Image (cartoon, rainbow, N blue to C red):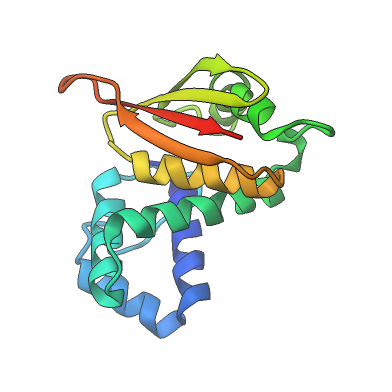
Length: 179
């Protein structure tokens, strides 16, 4: 997992709490990296899982909710950090349709060693969009949060549902977004 996700997670936690809380969280998570990340580095996704679980334990929220809230937050940060990836007049569905084929290509230019999930557009209609998320890291809740962040950004009111779509060896989630 790219370090930018970790550094943004730390900014998110500090913004919700404070610097002392963040340091206590890092210490309590007992990470091999000791919580030292650079935006361009690559780190085990299990460290993020440990951070999220520790945060959930300290706040009383469940880890799935924490990942969704963080994903929603991160989408807004991606927009402010990479505005060139957003086209004028684009809809939420149009943007989501470009993530796998266009946005991830640009991400690879910035971070050639990035291990990105597979995103496949299964259906793209004006009132319904279905996206298949496939990743060995099983961060469907994080992906769902990013989807909600996208909907927020584009001012789109929609209902998001999900269902397991893969196999044990190839986990996947279908996200259905309906206006």
